[in-house]
Amino acid sequence: MAMGAEAGGGGARRRGCACAKADFFPEESFSSWAAYGRALRSTGPRLADRLTSRSLEATELHEVRARSGADMKRDLTWWDLAWFGVGAVIGAGIFVLTGQEAKEVAGPAVVVSYVVSGVSAMLSVFCYTEFAVEIPVAGGSFAYLRVELGDFMAFVAAGNILLEYCIGGAAVARAWTSYFATLLNHQPGDFRIHAPALSPHYSELDPIAVVVITLICALAVLSTKGSSRFNYLLSILHLAVIAFIIVAGLTKADTSNMRDFTPFGTRGIFAASAVLFFAYIGFDAVSTMAEETRNPARDIPIGLVGSMAVTTALYCVLAVTLCLMQPYGAIDKDAPFSVAFADRGMDWAKYVVAFGALKGMTTVLLVSAVGQARYLTHIARTHMMPPWLAQVHPRTGTPVNATVVMLLATAVIAFFTDLGILANLLSISTLFIFMLVAVALLVRRYYVTGETTAADRNKLVACIAAILATSVATATCWGLNVDGWVPYAVTVPAWLASTVCLWALVPQARTPKLWGAPLVPWLPSASIAINIFLLGSIDAKSFERFGIWSAALLVYYLFVGLHASYDEAKAIAAEARAGKVEDGDSGQMAPPTNGK
Image 1 (cartoon, helix red, strand yellow):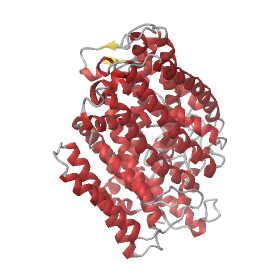
Image 2: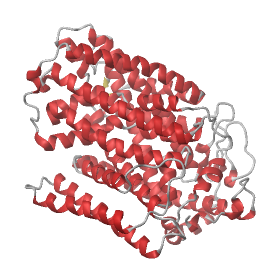
Image 3: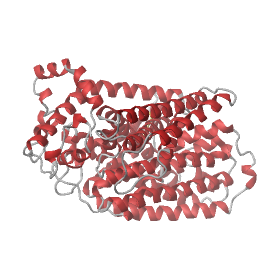
Image 4: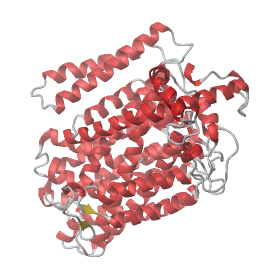
């Protein structure tokens, strides 16, 4: 199944099973133990180089993409992307987390939580869309950050992107098991195996989740277009079930259930918003399909923005329907809609709901599988991960190796880990990445190497730093339960003043060629602020797990990723200078370490 890798970033590919050392570590730094020792002794200078290096758009679009050997097939339209967007987002979030957050965190005000999360997600959608149109490659936010914020920040985001997809897929797969049990007239946890010897949060083993992930993997490696057709057929069925839930559920509505609208207060609304952001995750997977889109400038904005608008509206209506059907304290955490219909005398309807939920979660898993493999493929093209993972199968036009490896990791997590742990940790990684993409959009619009003056560059840095600092201050006050309105009367106007200064004092250095996010700098600045604010609503233990993961990423980068990507960047620069890369503009290109 696996295809051979290109040694040293170039050369002939070997067909068949490719498991030699050169397929994983072809770089000069890993050619021998002596070479590796020399590389480690050069860690300081190399790290300084990678901290300041920014990739070129042309490098991402041509040289880096060429590292996959075969090209991905460009056969997706806005229709495919829109259905991928709907299929990617509407799944475990609405069918599982709605019940959990309404019952324990927000009460009926969970609908407001969905609005807050939806606004944050839509701001991020606009940021992603501009990048996906301008830099249509499979790397998504990893590629965007490499171009605007440099190699190191891109790697930090890459590690969290991979974590996001593994955890997101695992959470959905475990939710799939719960609704499958309901469909067969069992309790949501009946099909899991209890292992008392393990920690409580890791003791409910889920073999069905592993089987589902394996089947999704098989479909994802066969064809992207085939996956798209399967996705929108299932999504149409899924939307029909959602329409049934809304109409049938509202016939059983009891407005008295909404009287105690905010039982947990404003803090509960925002705490739920941070977790429910998980329900909107998936649209970034659509941006990774830009490389396979026929007309990115037209198809991506329609597909991304349109699907997110539909999704947000459906989420809010579904949340209202659930809270009208049952008092928030009676809502079931694992299968809220199915149990709500059963309690309201429509026991038969729970099977329709469970069927629809399974359809929705299946499409989420499918789009996640497609998206995460493309992220890993582009990351491996830069050699931050082994280049064996970058190979695209010449017959199917899909990244087989990356798909299998990512879904194997997802299956292991899904087998052991509780949904609550997964949702909180996932939200941290995602909010962090979306914040970085918003920062990158500001850099893209206001800074171009060789054109932006030093004075304007310094003002840009100061304004972005102020936006980040004031956003962190607001989130910190919220997270520490600071009483009174005085701190917010300082931090919020300070954020506003920082954005005004950027708008008034720093001229934009770049105009989007094809499609641009509106209201810059206001939109990305608001995205930064709300993403950081939602981070301040997440529990401390989730940040501890996030810190452990970040430390592990740093260790890997310093001992492996830094040296592999450094060698590969130099190889690409050398090829460009020598005119060996087949690109019409290669003779004019500067090495990646020189910025744009």
